[in-house]
Length: 392
Image (cartoon, rainbow, N blue to C red; front, side):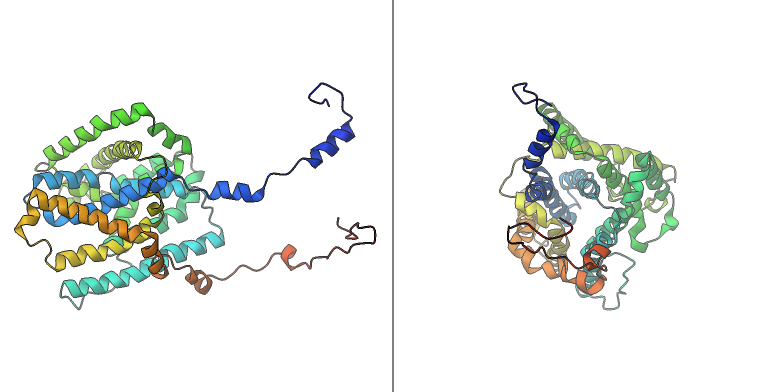
């Protein structure tokens, strides 16, 4: 052993000096682990704005080729973005009981609450008081909670596989030729969006750095422009319901072989658009970065505004279908979603969107380990100041 000046150091002295070196702070490490990536929070916020504007455009599609083209383009990548990010955030899920318990309270409990709430709202707005309540048939927005629950439970299995992406794509392709899957837990969407989730499981931080390179950002501009032009061209020629991933090929009125082909085509298109979207998402902290933490709550709450707007006749005016009206609808949808993602609103609705108290009510607390049950021997000080703890 040698010092910096090449002076020999006895081994015992080297060991003593090494012991005297300060240990790394556990608190600092925890802060580094818990730090949120502003790029991903920004992506979640901007993507949830596209979800809100897409729903706001739905009543405006009829008779407007431009709105339908924008609607098709947005639906080609906004839910793939969320599915991919959900997979990326699920890389650490290992299936331990406490993690499964949190999964139940974070997804299953809000699923039940909002499934009942949306069923009641639908009964009222559609003047259909006899509409059945079924927790196995997700209504409106709740399908994503069911899908995320299934995906995250199976994420340890996907991480063990040698080739997870081909298998996920194979399941999605098989789903498009299987109309008998039915509506239970909206398994068509669960399976057809599965490849994006598995893609997220396979991503690493350096992949997000790669799409943010300057050359990728410059290339994303003409790609998005071409995608919009293709969407405008395809409006009278293609059924944009392929991007919903909620029906099989026979249910869409086409031969069964079209299902696997369109699965690969839409997956390739969506992945390219997701990369273009992430390339232009700011990587620094912005005024809306904090709103990215409340996107799931905003997603669940904005459906009430969207349904009530249509029920109350807010789209009945002729001016609303003019360019000025369509821009107004877009801005209002973005403003409403921004407000719903704000921390004060999230705190008000936390009991239904993120009911932490349900964890203690529904999940059995783990028994203390043997080490925790062993009483701690308190160290007694001798007159010379040394500890008399025999395990010291």
